[in-house]
Image (cartoon, rainbow, N blue to C red; front, side):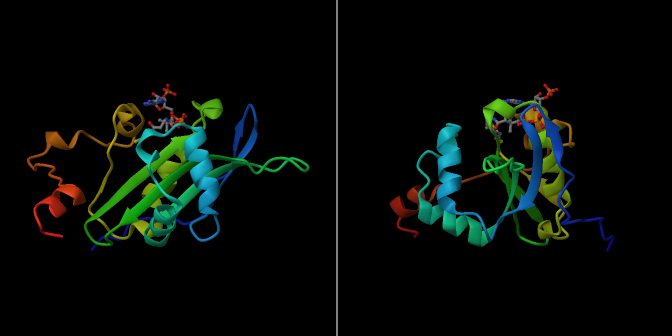
Length: 169
Ligand SMILES: CC(C)(COP(=O)(O)OP(=O)(O)OC[C@H]1O[C@@H](n2cnc3c(N)ncnc32)[C@H](O)[C@@H]1OP(=O)(O)O)[C@@H](O)C(=O)NCCC(=O)NCCS
């Protein structure tokens, strides 16, 4: 089996008009309350109902890569971007919660986090990476992501609510 080049080393900090942005794996150190505040402030629609308990469970089951403005005196360290990585370790890894603060959009922060996630060893020796997006497809096409419908497989899903309605769980 071919082993790919992976690295958990954080990317070099990025210069932005608001200062240098540094990258880190904060899976085990971040306070879920800070995450919730960031996602609410950025009006991320898909996390609108996410509770602190759900954030804790997500952090226990996946890796959270972050970007922060480097501290400046007493100020700074502000969380400005996230990307979450989950993997089954053999077949498929998935990216979630790719978000950059609006006032720092367009400076390559999400691209840097996605690049890191795609080569992070927590992804494991998988065969493919997947993600869902409404309108950020141009960002991902740069990495080679394509509409999954272009492949001969059908992407199917069922909600937990539907399974409960059917008495399955
Ligand atoms: C999409 C998003 C993560 C991009 O973050 P970013 O740090 O600005 O990304 P980068 O600077 O690395 O790359 C920006 C590129 O993404 C592309 N892009 C695709 N969809 C985009 C969108 N909805 N908003 C902004 N940029 C988008 C742009 O084409 C841009 O390329 P350009 O520089 O040639 O114009 C950020 O705008 C965001 O958080 N949006 C709201 C949440 C969201 O939709 N996340 C994606 C969910 S899958």
